[in-house]
Image (cartoon, rainbow, N blue to C red; front, side, top):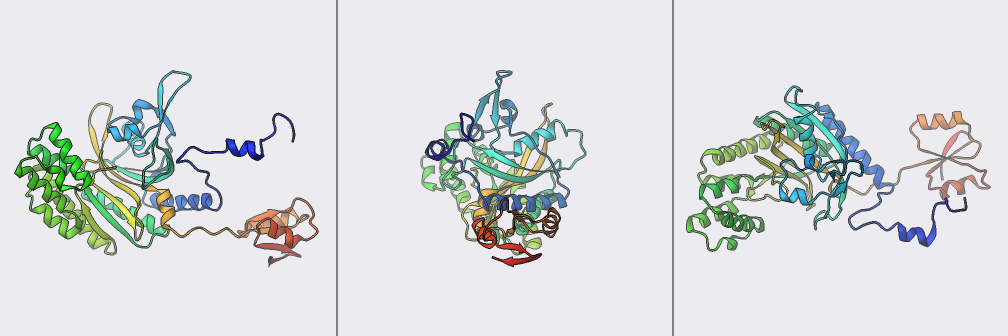
Length: 391
């Protein structure tokens, strides 16, 4: 078709097809591979009773910023609603949307509430580990239970779902995001001192504690040292003799480690009590799962609080899979086999082949050499005289 309404082609279109940094077109077979993996994950979530929900990509800014820390707020794209002139935001993470559903439309639903979800998220900046600014999340949330069994169910399901889609060897890294703030509170640190401490912990650099009192330095150096294999880390945490909320959190971590070790013996367990990046909103134990030989985390989860409109909160725990990391950890997908149906193949025969599970490519014009045409169109097989043959 020629004329002003025709689709642009050639160099002009190529220039217009450039994508912003961090965004990409997902082509075959990768797009189908990702969709297949998502289906596999969601099937596992559903098998545990996690009902699927689908919140919108865009919400009013205020809704997506409820309880948000500065890092999450900066990650969101903002747009103006042309109808209401209200600011809206594009989701950078789906967990906050599930929390909104639990606190509003599903506030009267029986607890514990089990919800699953999948969808694209967008972020204003990529990272060294995850340069993509748009990627797919798939996850699940268990809302309304503060039991240790709830946390373990989330860990078990996360491991089972990832195993189901092809990850054979995994490790889990457990975190205690609230522990450093609780320790800082114990020492009565000022805001400036807290900033200094948290910066040192994030950098895993004990030298950053210079200038603080000996007691503060000793405790936070011990906290930095209490990381690594679970048994060693727990032993290190016990030397700090935490009391109150901090002591309860460390004890809970120990019980969760025991459960995982018993029920999931093939899962390597490490603990990093100082890791807070990405776990800022966690109110308890957090965790990330890694595939053997892969530095990028497959997903992360943990315990957090859902805030209701009337001000009360309820416990929740969940897990989100990052599909880009999952795809990188698995073998590259192969091109699917396709069956070429030469021009003139009856609709009945074509339907029979599709019903048998074949992907068919219908010839639209008569070809001088049907086999050659099948190869040209990327088909692996051809239907000739009622027989399927390799091309």
